[in-house]
Amino acid sequence: MFEIARELNRSMTPDRAHAAIRILRAAPMRSVGLHAVLGRREVRPAVIEFFLRDADPAGRATAAFLLQEIPEGLPAEVLEAARRNVLDAPDALRVESMELLAAAGLNEGDARLIASTPAASAFEVRIAAARALAAGRAPVAILRSYLESLAADPSLPEEARNAALATARELR
Image (cartoon, rainbow, N blue to C red):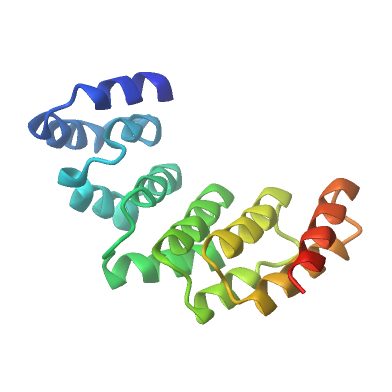
């Protein structure tokens, strides 16, 4: 599906991009179809609207993914919604919201928020938090502390613990 959406994107005019957004608002698989407008600046306001208001968490997660492609100048409302999602949302939306904050550039508060990802979270969410902290250039002390917490968690696979510890040591 993603490949089809990417191919559509290559041949899409701005008018067709807007039409695609209108159609996708009612589509049952909009989270996949939204990929057709990846990187399309002309539909960014509609993608922001999807992220903020779509009833389907998968649609909001896809919109967050798309917004990572053009993160500059995101409205404060989008960043606040991403912060709320980091705290309490289905896993896919939490992950994409962390990565959206990272793409927009983490401030110390956002870095601390992401680093507060609970140990009880799914493995994928915790690894995404580490990835977002690194990609968003979180303060070294926050990233190192988070990686050390991953390394010390016996519930994580040994390979992940070892990688987290090795990376934390490199940050000293």
